[in-house]
Amino acid sequence: MKKIRSLVILAATSVLAGQVALALPPPPPAQPPAAGPVPPPQAQGIPPAGNPPPAPGAQGFGAPLPGLTVTQTVDAMDGNSLFTTPRTPATGLGPIFNDVSCAACHSTPSIGGWGRTTTTRFGQTVAGIFNPLTSLDGSLLHARTTIPALQEVIPAQANVAARRLTTPLYGAGLVEAIPDAAIEALAAAKKPAGIAGRAALVLDVASNTTRVGRFGWKAQQATILSFTGDAFDNEIGVTNALFPTKHAPDGNTALLNAFLPNQAINDKTDPATGLSGIQLTTAYLEVLAPPPPGPATALSAQGARVFAAINCAACHVPSQQTGSSTIAALSNKTVNLYSDLLLHDMGALADGIAQGNAGTQEMRTAPLWGLRTRNLLLHDGRAATVDQAILDHAGEAAGSRTAYTQLSAGDRQALLEFLGTL
Image (cartoon, rainbow, N blue to C red; front, side, top):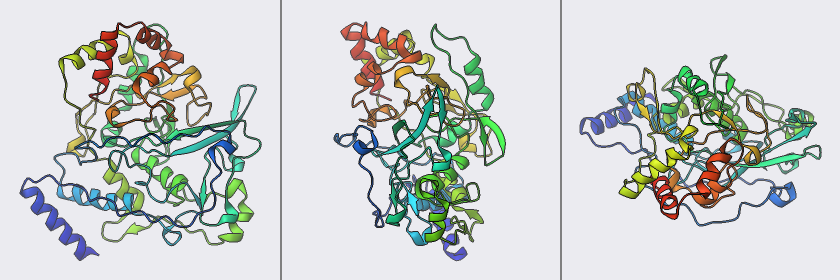
């Protein structure tokens, strides 16, 4: 293994010395294992997502950041392999899970992007208090299984269910490198009437410290490592050092133990690197480049001014700055993500699920970079166009939505042209 890795490092050194852009390898074709039946969305009380045409591809999406060292490049390649390789029960899949690899969900318009399938969150709200039904393995439904007898369903006690699309991971390392204090400063800054926003303070399991959350629809994770460990465990069923306990179907531990009596941690350490799977996957994700912007036009420049004038930029803050980092490619960089990474009360647009530090009405401001590649919008994919997504905004965004409806036809076209460059 060490000899093979040395050869890979030599090859990467040659590539970098020749100043040739290093493209991470494409994923192998997925071979999902047999899985139990998935309850149809209608049976879960959730509207179907429909089947709109696939999003267009985009040149440059999924590339690595420039300026990586040889070791960073090779670690990223190893992490990419883990990200894209389908799991089987022999390599830790399940027994209850949502898909067989990270890339199975993070796939559009390239590996590391957003996903067209949705996961389901559920819970019970009584007198305004949300209960994630943790004892019944809430709030995430594991919709697939390697053992049909362990198939999960939404429990009868649940009176709230919501679908969520997979969020894209481009530029994740840059987002992580934004200092907590910078996000908290945005929360404290003066804003237009009706707009608030607060930082999500969460326990980061990787460091066992309270940090500002920034990943996920509810900003429920603060670091890539914690986000990755959670995804390995919750979405694929691969237990790891951060999340070592297998999920029992509908909370039935006895049933899980009957079918799977031996439950050692599935995430293995690579002897060549001394890094675990979640660490190598983190090494890949932290050097993913951000989405490249589309070409600007005179009309899109006008649209950028409209974007600011109707206060879209109050939440979709055009850029933030990273702090110093041990990875030079992440250190003191401008991050054009179009998000303040804060939680906002979204009113009727919220999903009714409390998670992390976020309440049932709160959602993290979704970054808009890469927007032009998407044709399923908002957290549950309900909108197929940017126009519809804006019209569906509510809560703190209601003022901007109203201002949008009052724009002249020319200004509205300009705004949509601008958003089409992101």
